Image 1 (tube, rainbow, N blue to C red):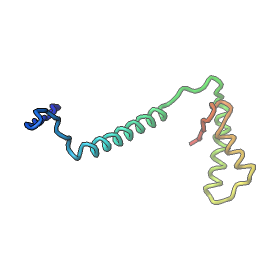
Image 2 (image 1 turned 90 degrees about the vertical axis):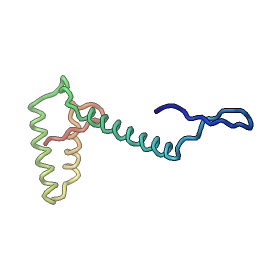
Image 3 (image 1 turned 45 degrees about the horizontal axis):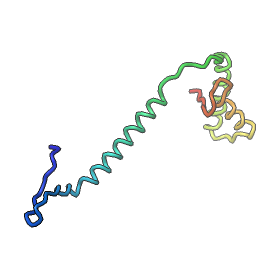
Image 4 (image 1 turned 90 degrees about the horizontal axis):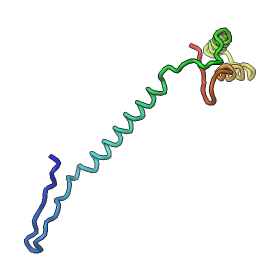
Length: 108
């Protein structure tokens, strides 16, 4: 299966490897795309795994943030425009004191 096919040139008395199929390069490129896609899916699944709660997590504060966030999101979904202050509150609620840098919390 993985053996290389050889040809003999009687004029020069030398051996040379036969060229690969024309489909070799497309198959290599297709395989690379498939591998990259599977690698990305695996990384996304790794990122979605549950993580332990941080030590400074406050359940009561979480519940207060959740109620306020749900109220503001329901107002937004109902078609009522949010004020600048309410949009700022949503941002602050999504970045609570216990979150790490770049982490966004959603309260469903």
